[in-house]
Amino acid sequence: MKQNKTEAGAAFRPLTPKIRAELDARYRQKLAAVQGFAPVNPAGTVYYVSSVRGNDDFSGTSPDRPLQTPSACASKIREGDTILFECGSIFRRTENDRFLSGLKNGMTLATYGKGSKPVFYGSIQVPAEDWIRLENSDIYYFDGSALDLNIYADIGSIVFDHGRAWGIKTLMTFNDPNTKQSPAGKTLALTGVSNGLTTADIPSYPFNGGADLQGDLSFYHDYAQKRVYLCCKGGNPAERFGSVELSLSSFPFTMENPAVNMTFLNLDFRNFGSHVIRPMNCKNMTVKNCEFRFVGGVVMPNYGEWRNYYTRLGNAVENWNACDGLTVENCYFDQIYDTVVTTQSNSDVLSRNIVCKNNVAERFWWGIELWTVKNAEFSNVEISGNYFGKIGEGFSTQRPDKVDPGTDFAVNAYVSVSGGPYEMKHSFAVTDNLVDGTTGKMFFCNQPKTNKTDDGVLFDRNVYVGSADRDLARLFGKFDKDGGKTFAYTQEGVEAVQSLGIEPNGTFYFLP
Image 1 (spheres, rainbow, N blue to C red):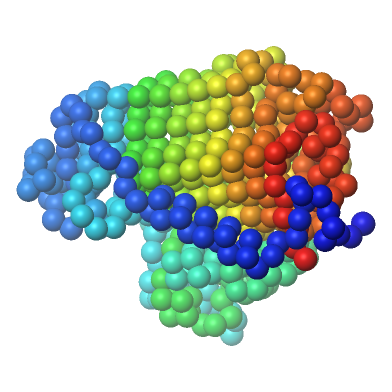
Image 2 (image 1 turned 60 degrees about the horizontal axis):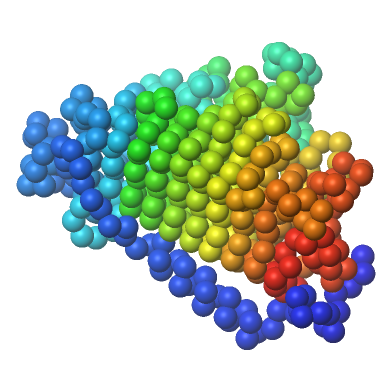
């Protein structure tokens, strides 16, 4: 591959210490903004919930007599009501695997009081006495029989010491990918996978159960025994790390379908094995100044007949099916197995009025991912002012599908628009974002706006930081007759993209 040159054009230039400092200052400014609080305007009946001062025997309609658990609101709430969670509170999953069942349309979930944002844990904390060591080994197991930890209550991740390290989920391969009923007796190989402490390739090896685990912090969920096995080479995991959190498969809130006029403000979500905020057919859904850490990793047992292993999932904010109004603004995302924000469908649906702006997202696989089937509408979409960094790093490195099947190109990106072709009504823009490093690609688009295609995704005024061993983009369109073209992150690749009318005012920095 041709080397970058310091004499490159104005759009493609070396990343100097001065520019690095300027970009870091821009990141810190955005981070401070997302860690702030959005204004709260309660409506309807207002319920107060506090893990510190609450009691589920209280009425919950006064900050002086708050409820203690979110689930205590379930029988009380009505359409258009507001639930406020006291700052400094910590809420954990309930026995029925949900925080709130049956959220009504028009509701607002937000905060009151002073202090840190209330934290919702989608995980259980396992103390030292609940880890049982297999004799003469580094293998420990947790008996989850009481929680019925089966394949539909899967463990998506194990988070150690509040994110200092994390577990690597071990999956079995299957001889028959259609039925998933014939284990091949081998583990699924992984490449370049990190547990937060080290990064290495993990080859496939013979496997008959949890006692065969290899590699520090690898874990295996034995669905038949309802046990979680963990290889921990530093002794009892809860003594080695202080805290051990098992992220469970659970949607924390259930909503009406369609989900209409829902608002989430100033909430902090951590360690959710599956999606966190997941409406269906949403209309006017707003998520502001919320924070999401360690999302995803659970298996989807009835998905993916073309694979000989279970597919894992996990998006922070996902709308399924039609979308008419979705705003995600000033939020923070870190360690997302799959996608930060997405709306997607397998049907011909309308998807419009989507805004993702001024967010900070780090260590994820996809940033903003949008797709439906062919001949649908994706219009009035704004993706602007966001910071996307360390794409494909961290927790998401344990994905086995880093490269699209049958190809040699990586598929992670800060923006992915696949499917289509779409009717975009000239109103789909990706502008003024800072994209700071990727392990694969910067962006992926089936329908970019170019000199020859007026109705497509406009990419412009974005700032990119990368190296020559990565790619700028994978693009499809009338300019290509071979089913997609990959553009390298080099001066030549940038010039080729700009010659198509893509990123005409973009700025590209390469690592010297």
